[in-house]
Structure formats: structure tokens, C-alpha cells
Length: 94
Image 1 (cartoon, rainbow, N blue to C red):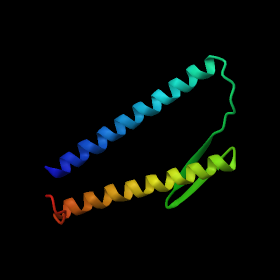
Image 2: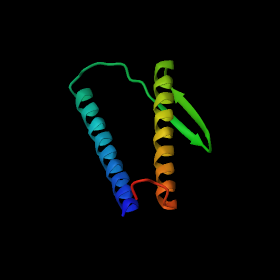
Image 3: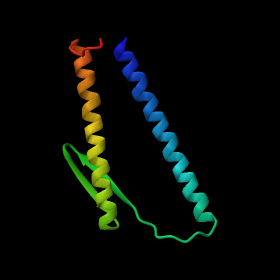
């Protein structure tokens, strides 16, 4: 029961994040279309095993991506540990 609830929650969060990302891309495209000039920066995080490789067009973008990568790692670790505890029956609310 709890595992099903956790899975539904994780899937829901994933769908919401995908929708928010799509909305941000759409808003950015509309803003660029209006002729608003701005500086474009970008970057990426590639995770190979336990090693994250961070690429960015500036130091500011690289630092922001490192913070986001660490936050995502902590979130994934927490979800994994909760799932493991629920699976073993040790989680207090099962």
C-alpha cells in the first residue's frame, strides 16, 4: 500500500516537473520572440557512475548546475532509502 503510494507520488512529481520544464521552454521562446535582448548561457551535467561531469558556458552556470546536481543526488538517495526501508518493513508508517 505504502509502496504503491510512493510510486504514484514519484510518477506524479516526474510528470509535474516535465510539464514545468516544457512551460519554461515555451515562455523563454515567447520572450525571445518579443525582441527582448538578453545574454544566453547554458550548461549540462553528465553523470557517469558516481562521477558528475559539469559543463557550462560560464562559471556561474557551472556552479548553479553543481548545486542542482547535488540536490538531485540527495533527493534520489532519499527516495531510494525510503523505498528500501518500506520494502524491508522497517519504515515506521507501514
